Every structure is written in C-alpha cells, then in structure tokens.
Length: 346
Image (tube, rainbow, N blue to C red):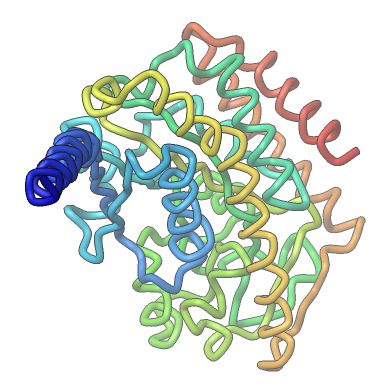
C-alpha cells in the first residue's frame, strides 16, 4: 500500500514539474531581444549615461520581456544610422539629425543659437514640441520615434587668439558639426571645415584647423584641451545639435501594446530628461578639466554678445523660410520651444 502511495506521489510530482516546464517554455519564448547599433565608444556619455541606463530601464519595465542588446560594433557609419533603423538592419539606433543635411528640416530648429543654458530644459522642451508640433510632418517615416534630445550648448574653441571683439572671429578656420553651423561660421566670417568629430585632434594638431565648434564635454573626450587654448562661451550657446532615438516601425508593431506603453514610459520625455541631465553633468566636468589643462575660459561679454546676435539673426529667419511651405507652423513651434524652456526652468 505504501509502495503504491509512493509511486502515486512521485507521479503527481512529475506531472506538476512537467506542467511547470510547459508553462515556462512559452514565457521564455516571449522574450524579445532588440539590437541597438552603437557607433560611439562605451565611455562616451551617450552610451554609458544614456543608452545603457535606458536599456536597463526597458528590461525592468517590461519585466524582462524586452531586452536591448547594445552592440559593440556599429552596423554602419554614423551618417547611416537613421536608415539602419528604417530599413530594419538594426532594430534601434540613435544619431544626429544634422548628419543627413536637408533631410530633417524641422530638427534644425533646435540647432539655432541662444536657446538654452543647459541640455536638460532644451531636451525636454524639444520632446514636448516634437509631440505637439513636429511629429505630424512624419520626417521619421518608417520608424517609431522613441525620443529626441540635444547636447549641451555648442561653443567655439580655438588655438590662435582670445575672442574679445566680433573681428576676432574673422579668418579662423573651424571644424563644424552640421549645416546650421556652416551658416553660423560664415556669418561670423570664419572659414568652415567639414570633418568627422573623430578627426578633430588631427585637424587641430596639424594646423589645418584653428578651432572647432563643439559642446564642452567633447573637448576632453577627444583630448583637445592639449591642442586648444581659448574657450569662447556664450551663456546660451552659439548652436546646438539635434539627436534621435528611433526603432524600426515593423519591429515596434510586433511588440505587445502593453510592452509598447511600458517602453514609452521610460522613453519620450523621460529619456530626453535623462539625456539632458547626463550631458549637463559631462559639460560641468569638462569645464573643470579644461581649466586644469590651462585653457583660457572666456565668457562672452555683453557688448560682444550683442554684436554676435546681430550677425546671427538671419539664421532664424532662414530656417522659418525653409519650413514655411511644410505642414508645420515654424514660428508657432519655435515660440512653443522657447516657452517650454522657460517653463521648465521655473
């Protein structure tokens, strides 16, 4: 009798274990791994302070059902990263709108000068205005826009002379990051040089370039404090750069509605805030490193700032004219951006 009872108990345990395995198998099969093509070193603030923390957040809010694999080798050039997501080569990518000149005209709004003292308010304001005004233009067709964000205020650095008057800019050969800064450089009568950021040290150390337009964090990241002497810092920046975080639309649609909502809870404005805070922290640390390296840190004096503003006023008018025929009211969007920056600061 005991023998039969023992056999029955073992059979029951076996059946229960089998049932548990059957239940576990479908759950394991539901895990989705999304590849994110990464074109920057793991030590860069975008990777270590934005993308990697966000990937962990996605894992957490989806309870492990969606995992993001941040690749150690890029699937293409930085300039190709939007198309890598659109075409499904990579599930998720991030990149710089300005690397595709003329393609994202509305994104050029946040590249205009004198918008914000920090990245956080501008990035959050940008996402809010993107949702309300810019998204309807569908410039990112083929992808799900997970977030848009900006770097810290772009500044001008050079190895030749301190900038005390508007004439001091004239003739400086400067490496520029995007189309907007090309026009900015010409307005200040500098000579713009287009080259990848990775070539900055080579251009400066060889004397091909006298200076560079960069956010503060990029100077020590690319070790440029060794070849630069003067930092000319406008309080709200000479320019900015617009970034995207996008996912292949078909891959997005394959996720459950529940997981899509969970992912957006840590994307959108939440990611814009995370990115802005990370960039502001990197900028603050970079300024300390520049001072320690002996660079001259020169805030732009009010009289010079007024002269610069006068020279650069045409940039805003040119952008408004460029987007005038499109589906977005450029002036309303820009006014909303500025209002959101102020509101966030309060």
